[in-house]
Image (tube, rainbow, N blue to C red; front, side, top):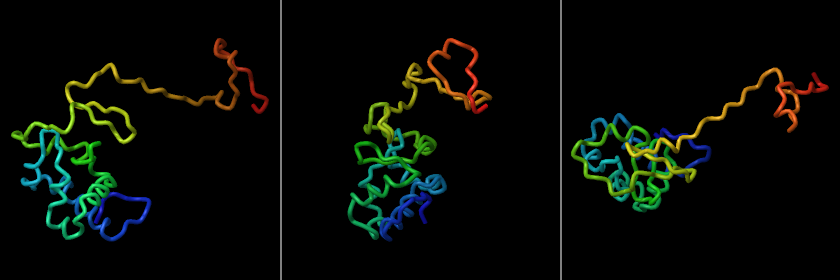
Length: 161
């Protein structure tokens, strides 16, 4: 049964396929599935064609594109932008074996789903961090603001207050 909750229905093939793939990438399975962990590169990436070749996946579909599409629906994994590799989201590093081959999937960055560049690892540039903007509503929250007020500490009272 899939872990990912979708806001739309899936056909039976995709629903069962999503459940099977999420089982493969579950923390519980990865903790004991040495074969799958041996397929990971140093950045946790696994070939999607390999996943599509698993017997239980092939019983559901022989179409690797359906497997790729279902992987993109899962909230447990992330699909590399190139579309040929997948890995567990967030926790992938704890399952990479010490002798895993070096990753050839990407350089040190992986664009996220919004197209922004998310940098991983030690080479992450701390200068790219942005400060969060916090808006605080206080007793003046209902008052209208005008450009003249930016230089004044006192806001003009609103007629509604």
